[in-house]
Amino acid sequence: MIVNKQIKGLDFEFKEIEKARKNNELLSFDLELSKACNLKCIYCYAESGKKSPNEMTLKEIFSVIKQAKEMGAKKVVIIGGGEPLLYPHYWKVLNKIRKEGLSSITFTNGTMITKELAKKLFEKKEDIAMKFNSFDEKKQDYLAGNVQNTGKKIKEALTNLLEAGYSMDEKSPKLALETIVCKDNYNEIEKIYKYCREKNILPYIEILTIQGYAVDNKKNLSITPQQGLKLFKKLQEYDQKNWKINWPLTPPIVGQTCKRMHYSAYITATGEVQPCPGVNISGGNIKEKKLLEIISNSEIFNKVRHINQNIKNPCKSCKYHKDNNCYGCRGTAYQETGDLFGCDPTCWWISKNKKGLNGNKT
Image 1 (spheres, rainbow, N blue to C red):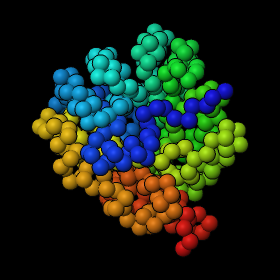
Image 2 (cartoon, rainbow, N blue to C red; image 1 turned 60 degrees about the horizontal axis):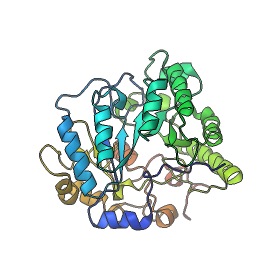
Image 3 (spheres, rainbow, N blue to C red; image 1 turned 90 degrees about the vertical axis):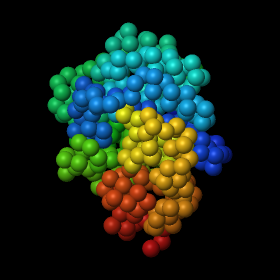
Image 4 (tube, helix red, strand yellow; image 1 turned 180 degrees about the horizontal axis):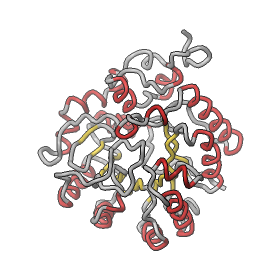
């Protein structure tokens, strides 16, 4: 059995990344279609719910896809800033992406994925990252903002996607389960992870960023850096022992380090262009400027494209930064400290309780 280590286009080789960074190119980009959503997840970074005023027109979305392609983009990440499958022109957007010769992945809460829809997504060769925070339906309902039957619908969606052929083999579209680590599901993460590996599904497990709705729920959601380290270690050991897969022990995502500051951009439903969902500092709006101009000339993108020079100690001197180009989660650093290049407070290597944890000698 071949286990999916990653979804093609969510990770790139060092040479590709360096070339993109130096030339103000893109390798992938996040595209938010609308803020409209049928859930109200208590951890939602985007505070999704209702459609925002002045959202991009379909013509503007098409334009930004074409511009991104011209800048070297290979993959479009249709992000869940709202629920993409609620967007009335979703299939037109998907067709445009394919027309431009790009691949894509849709992040979805899964509640709308019927058998028919799963088959259609499979036929379009659309990779899917679906919300899956718990096997416990009531717990999933709670995390989704107490929307009843959410957990049931997500389980049904998972069955529908697998039956449609997702993750069946190396040639089939890939399926990931997106899980946010929080207090409520902490003890269940290992079970979800092992389930994914056994089903050839990519486990996309991420430490929570305290942003949006999560701010008011921080006390009930956040885990400690020590808990994060303990969990990641268990998952790392499981992968090493059972699948011969090795990865660096760094937050915020299990199995990979974030490198998007070097080559990506996040385009909101209203056209603002920012480095990522967590770093919600706009470099400009695509309704007013070309994407290339924003990436090339804006102060924020100039700073994040040179993150290795701008990141501060102790992150800068950490062995994981030196060896793996890790910079933690810049979104978390910015949201919780106000310093884009300061320490990621969820990182166990720089936590206050450094004894036995730090990646360097202190």
